[in-house]
Length: 313
Image 1: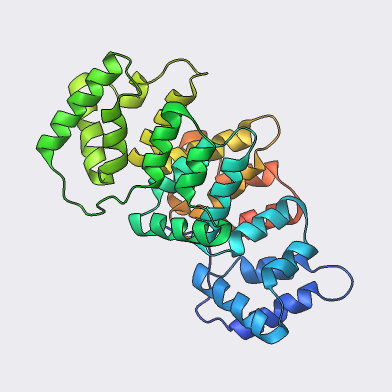
Image 2 (image 1 turned 30 degrees about the vertical axis):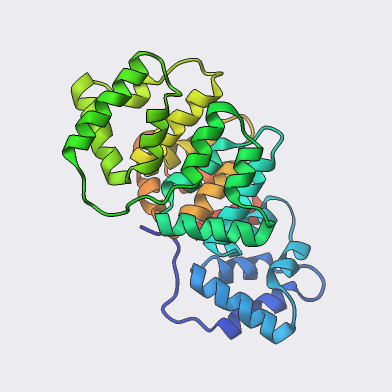
């Protein structure tokens, strides 16, 4: 369930002209930029970029980057890109950090459909002249590398069919490995990186029914263990992405100093998918509407864009 409010009819030429006008002369009209781009879906945003280039022989993304700044510029840039290209950029930024942000790689590989992940890998290669797998492998090590490379290389079955016998036997395999604290067991990596999401949900449910607790509860351990954190995030993303994203939003707002990167990432990547459901979950969990929490923690044009994408003017 998307949150963005898109009008019935759109003229991409008029939009391109409005954006040109917003960027011309003294000072930029940020409100005009938000009122156009904040109410256009991915297909329309691409058409606007093409129309703008056709009309003015200029790259709209580059123009906006030169006109805007700070968190607002970053959010507009992330929003205006094609979804696969945006994920490629997010992945590259996450990998190249001094301390790589494995959560971003997990989100992209575990919450996108097989076709979407394939498109991200193609976009990454086109943009950076390296494969995503290659760069993930180069910037990680040990068991974390094994898991992340397997996840980004996956092309899972995406249908509804599940095999109950497989769910039962793999729930047992997972339980044995977790009980023996063999968290890096190759069978755990094989199961998490090859099975369909529906099959994994059946396996996790079997695990819970058999042992009276979820697998993630059984994986609670040394908070400094990087691989264990990666494993828990992977299972959460595969099993209940909405719950996972709600937690990312909660943590991004609750910490001392907002984590704008995480806040922007979740809102721009989920606004056209399931952000309405994530908002409901957030309210249930925190007794505060998400837009109210975002409004309290952000300011200026950055705040205005996020609230627009959340469906609140």
